[in-house]
Length: 246
Image (cartoon, rainbow, N blue to C red; front, side):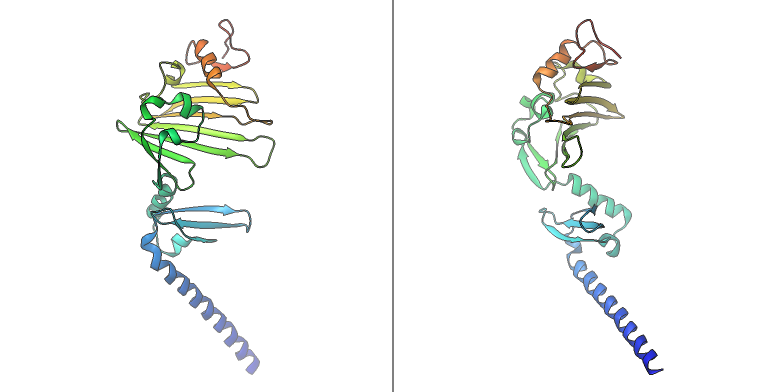
């Protein structure tokens, strides 16, 4: 009987210790709850757990924990969504447009003369940049694909909302004003243009099974030279004035 009570006492002590530790941890987070400006939850392959990472308004990391801290702290779904949006689109650093990571979007698709001296915001990860111009929001993103697998390279995207071609080089490249348009060079690059609702979305990439090849001004000029209408999909190898195909 005494042994049974001893085991129960040990179990109860362990539970109480766990509760105390949890309360202490929650108390610690309560102290910095007001400082939380942005959070992101992502699966971590190293320990096989989903981590919640939160930052203050200066982009300094507050904590990185393998569980749903926001739920523990009582954040509502709406508040959590706002924190996740701030992670992706919060202004954590300002840069000049001309200092953005170069790509076909920054060097040709956008009107660089219009934006070159403009200060724009970057997110925490420095892979998304955004700014306003005449009440339109421009969002430029860079995504690297690939330490593993056969294909690797970058995906660049530009979103303009509400829809406008202001700031887009449509005079030089009229196909940029299409509601839907695509072009590609096999195993080299792709270009895709869509009007999605009230948003202009332009995506370019150089995803390739070999050394990636960027879409450059030569490729853009060749597409523009053979451009006839928005319904045509262009294969860089097959384009000619006589040879377009759907």
